[in-house]
Image 1 (cartoon, rainbow over the protein chains, first blue to last red):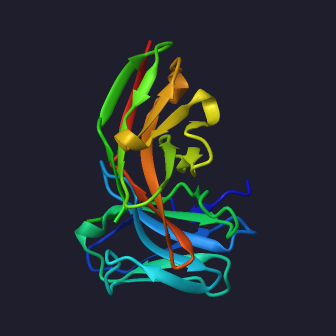
Image 2 (cartoon, rainbow over the protein chains, first blue to last red):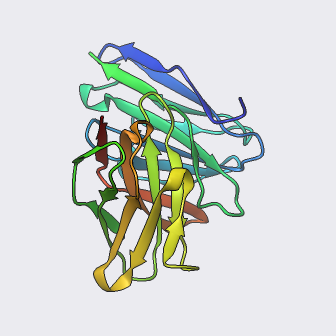
Length: 114
Length: 115
């Protein structure tokens, strides 16, 4: 399968712990996005990379959140000192620069903070 | 800022009957609009997109949507529902920002298809 893959599929953690998620985009895609989706809502934009450069961050992304894409391929999203309000589905998407409006989404990582 | 409003959080239809999922948008200029579908435990999938080339847009799986500027609407339709259409549908507007395409999603419409 050459789609967007995310790992892990599910993560249960205790409040205050740090968690890290990984996203592997489609190999030739130079754009990578992170979104967050809570129950009953549509996905909300968190941040965006073009190659290894993080070009935009939403105000939703507090200081406890950090995202990296060190070699312009896979990306990680880390949440430090998790809070119950961080419980959500974290979605990764990728696209080509040309025709970049078509985003390909992964299945997401479901985070539950107890 | 651009936004979309999905007018129904849940829609229930019988198999073989038409589907109508409603979406209104707000934009200060000509928007790019999309419909995405999310099946349980699967990634979001693009159904169709409008980018000003034609007001009636055909997508995958028999879905289509019509852009109506006078009504600021972009409703999704299908002539005949199938059980496999049961999923959550999102109306989306795209905004170019910093070189990327930031998508703003509606709150979603859960489509239920009954026998």
